[in-house]
Length: 157
Length: 327
Image (tube, rainbow over all chains, first blue to last red; front, side, top):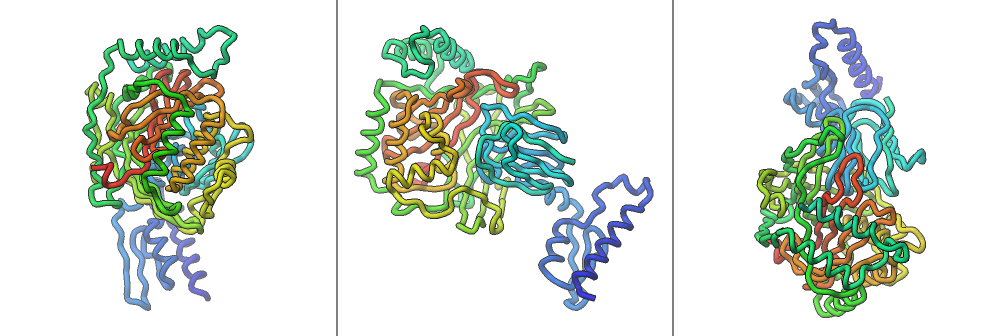
């Protein structure tokens, strides 16, 4: 079996295990592989997930543990806080911002010129639109520069 | 008081006889009246105590030290304090501004080639639309990028200030706190832009570039200014290119020369006011009297909307920051 398949199986197993956790344990809702762990697994083949913040690479005799808090920072996108949708007045998430915490169609006032958009939600996507014309789709956990006049952001679950 | 100024400015504009187009240049009497009103309300010229320390050079670029300082009113309109308007003096025309800038551009050496790197000092609001809270976001940012869309944006927070401090609020200075709040490393393809090639220096080159950044055919001066802002947020251009941009601004209808002032980094500039076609906002483009280059832009809301009150200066951005200018 290819290593990537093993890794995928391990990740799937972890997700299934966590998904089957009793409600008591679900108080902590961040029980997924930390983004730093996930990034390292992509970068260095042969890694096996131990838990959300711990992975080992047996052939390399290497292990990696990241602070539990890193997941919080890693899921924000630039200065767009975890779970929010942010419109910025300059490219690459700089300048002033309008931020939204709900998933809905959010109107952007004409006084605010949107140059980039971040989607720091964990699922779904955000359509950047002029009226009903789609200018750009920004997936969860990502961002994009935008060209054109933005009049609303439409969040999709 | 600043709010009152801009509201009054708009009321004066609205009160124009129907024979005068809304976006027509004000005559000398109107300018004098406006200036007299502005001067009479005690708005003091701000101190030029800017000390933007790019601390350790480029790494010390700014950020978003955000200082929560205002709460939106129950109606959903921001009531936050905003900076005092720049205090312009002296009469001139857009043609004079461009002529003087052209002469200066010829005399003072500038960048030898366009670069995909920009340092910006900016001030603006971050508005949590749901919670109706507003935060001040002074930033010093450095953007570098490559044609493949890779690059890096580093943002250093500006120094927060007490929003109840009227002097600080009026000045809204952007001084570095040295704290990096965003370090966005962009992988190839991440930095999307409508123009990646090194632009030429002719009139047609600049028109093509501005079109790529959203300038329509037969643009208003406001639309030219908006496209220029997008370009200068991504490129540091040569003097020849700035000259062409200024000429395009002059050719378009709707720009009003405001006279001389110093910008919020203490640099001598002249201003050109550009009102949006719908009258919702106006931008002031700042042209350096030292270099002839376009070095900044400010936005004022003229009509209240769901987020900002009329009269609020909601953002400004300043470019061409170097260690001589930024001490």
